[in-house]
Every structure is written in C-alpha cells, then in structure tokens.
Image 1 (cartoon, rainbow, N blue to C red):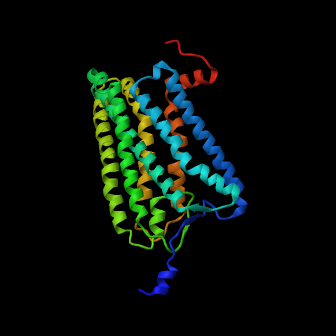
Image 2 (image 1 turned 30 degrees about the vertical axis):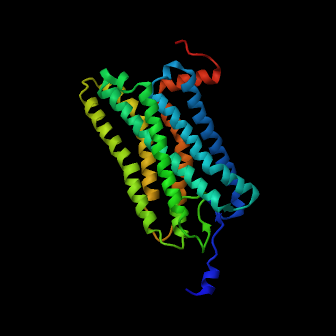
Image 3 (image 1 turned 120 degrees about the vertical axis):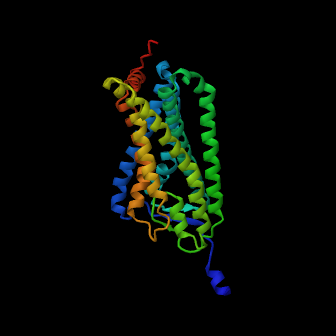
Length: 315
C-alpha cells in the first residue's frame, strides 16, 4: 500500500453532528421546540411514575411495567436531546468519538429495554384476560421483577455487542453525520472499512432481539382477541379490549418507526426522512406514551389529579 495514502488516512477522533437544520437562523426555533418537548416528556413520564408510586390502586403488574417504561422513556430522550440543545447553545457541532459510541450504547440499550417491556406488558394482558384464575400466581411480584431484570440484561447484551462491533470499524475519511445523534446507520455510512459483517450482525441480532418479542406480542394479542370475541355482551368486549388499546397503539408506533429506521441500511444515502424517524423514535414516542396511557384510563387520570392536588387515595 502507498505510504502517502496511509499518511492521509488519519483516524477520526471526533464527528460533526449537523443536527436537524443547517441554517443558523432556525437554531433558536429548534432549541425552543426541543426544550419544550424535553420538559413535557420528562414531566409527563415522571408524573405517570409518581401516580403509580403513590396510588395503591395502581400497584398491579400492568402499572409496574408502565412505571418502568416511563423511566426508560425519560432516559431515551435524555440520551439525545440535552446534548443537541447544548450544541445549539454553544454553536459547537463536534462530538468526540468516545462520546458518540457512549451515546450509541445507551440509545440501543434503552430502545432494547423498551422493546422487552412492551413484550412483558403484552404477556401481562394475555394472562389477565385469558388466564384470570392463575393470573395472581403467574404474574407475582417475583415474576414481574424477573421480567424487568431479564429485559435489562438482554438489552445490555445487545447494546454492548453492537457498540463493540462498531468500535472495530475504521473511521478515517468523512466525519460529518447528517443527524442530531449518533446511531448505527449513520456510523455505517461513514466507515472506511467494510460494514458487511456489522450489518449482518444487526439483522441477525435484530431478528432475535426484536423479532422474537414482536412474535410474542402478536401471539399474545391473538389469544386476547379470541377471548374477547367469546364475550357475548358488546359492553363487556369494549371494557376488556379497552385495557389493551393503549398498549397496542404504543407497540405500533414503536415497531413502525424502528423497522423504518434500521431496515434501510442498504440505502445509498440517508435522507431527511431518517431525521424525521429519529425525532419520532427519541422524542415523539416518549412524549406520546404518557398521553396514550392516560387518555382513556380513568384510574391513571384520577391518580394524576391526586398527585397534582396533593390528595391521597382513600383505599
């Protein structure tokens, strides 16, 4: 190999995150919008968590998982948005290589936990509706804690695998990321070494870590739907299925945006659509989840009112 060529292939020590818009005139508007979204998301999810903690009526498995999901949603938006807001304030777009990989690790970790928690919630609905007589024993506090612990363990393994695999790539050419955070598709685009093995690893692990939970969710709700259809009264059907509607909406949003984001790795150029999906994954989803879960849930609404007014539950 040509020595002069080797000298020119300097290892990248930092990346340049261009953010959502490149025009400095729009930065103040973007800052205000994302600061508002961040405060609303953190406030909404922490309010849900506080309501679940203080209201004894919500001390049941479904809300235990929802409380954990709220913590993960706060973490997911905190991994990406505050760093972007800091860059908008300082007008410094550079992010060190190590910080980029750290952000990637925590983002993949939290998205993975989100995925497994949604699966645990689907399993909970399956047991509650299809196996009501054994529900209390099959979904005991010990089982709940085990499901959450396994969710974190599997997600940690997944995140560590992808982060280590990404760290083996060589970055010696362009270092400009057309996004507001570090993620696998953007880093694959910038690598000057082959990413074929990394992409195969992403698809293989993704099939196991995301495909399996999705199959379990679909199976759970197929049984739930069959059980609901056996209920004779229309009112009974609506009441039973209403407990699943919010979760189904969150699952659809989560998997829809996730599939679009990671199944397009073969595309020659990442577009503004990827930025939009990134916003949806890390900002809109965490912000909508408290709204979706409380919109048609009188128990959560009542608990939130008691948290805001300082009143305690009578039970």
